[in-house]
Length: 226
Image (cartoon, rainbow, N blue to C red; front, top):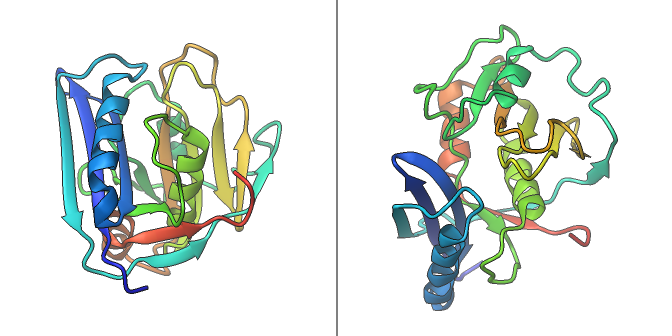
């Protein structure tokens, strides 16, 4: 992989509250088109028009790691997928208190491991290996890409995510190498939603996990039609 890659990130807020965010890893020639698409996306978000939009472009200095996407399985309910995991993860993911990132939880003790609990962990530097440029959000594709990167973090046991969009009731759980898509994890119109990562601290340190999640560039190779 000899191409030069750039990270393009968009963050939008209103009154200091996060409205939307997205990112891409792309080649230089596509940067103008992608920045325009992400700006339009921020201006047309269901949470309202932001009063601040930040677009950041940085050259990727490390060759991206290429990972095969997680296999997707559609299930009707949570069932036993959360068995043995600390309950605090579900409490955080279902809370109406919006975090900017995800909670990082010690799977053995239930202790939160983020340096800043209000910020959480912001998974960054990932994209699909081949994906069209569009202004439209694709929650599912973006979730699978993020979850695939998170799953390959050393020591990661599971991930729980519930959409924070009032127009979506869905969520997912990643465990044992599978992405379990669940259609109803909250009521329609409910604003709660968030994300929790469960880390085995006997395998890796929180600092090592955070460095991978926030800074290691990753491209996801699609294995199935998304």
